[in-house]
Image (cartoon, rainbow, N blue to C red):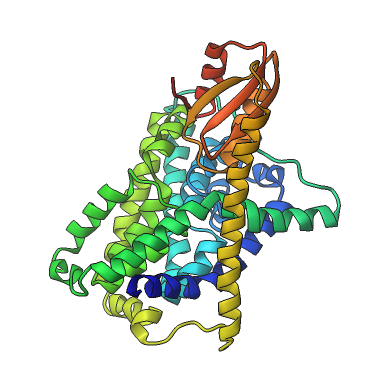
Length: 414
């Protein structure tokens, strides 16, 4: 019962802000065309890199979903410097995670998180731009993958796309990781002693290095990392270490680094990872060691300060939002697996079944479907995201399919 109460309290605190963030995410997706952003990102200097970071900070894309988007920007004319800046800024935060960060961790975290993402993106993008201007980056073809979606022309169509993307597609994209984050956070709240991390408070830098070592290889989305970081702070983790988790966890994982190496080159990938790690530890040390800053971050947390953000005291609204969030997650999950069942039913003996590793969200699904559909001889492609399968119909060899999947940044499992 204690575990369920902890889980419900976390959902209760996050749900209004998550739903608001999802709505804004839908608006951005429906009304902001990729071509507009690409025109701003063609240079290798500060202006293009800054634009890329500013555009990336509010976008609610995870570290896998941002990859095809960044490659699409490269295909549309964006420089590698600007694309790298976009890659660093985007997965660390987003409108949905900013709102959720405020609800669970307070205003200072909600402000510093996007600021830290912006600064690390500028650093990484400018470093790549320097290599790009000097010709030290290998000539990687970035025109292999594009997951852009045709936007409806009418206002009604865009409003429908806003709702569908924000409250259905986004739920499918990050729902699993959000649920995992909440479940893990509730376990931490119940099982970890309250003074656990305070025993190691004398070595914050060591704590940060350990958190980076754990967070970088694993996959956790910007929103899913919030309840984990909040729960760890409740057990004595310093706010600087919590910030390291919030920055490093969503921005880098093994799968995204492998794809990035193929699409942008190993030197750009090294700059990408270095920027994230140094930026996370640097901002973490700033929070923990700047006079009075650590105490301000701890005091601003709703759970520490003895109050919660109540949306104007409307408790009924928070209850409604919590129920709506759970219902939307359930509908999105059921829809995802119903699609899997439907695809299995319509599969014909002529279709090739391709097992693909690395697809995490609907952006990945669209990327693979679009890429395989472009192959000569292919008549139809359907991707079962839940099972990680692609059903390909047409006269095309397994070798050609595997080569295309690799070019898209994923891996065919034999």
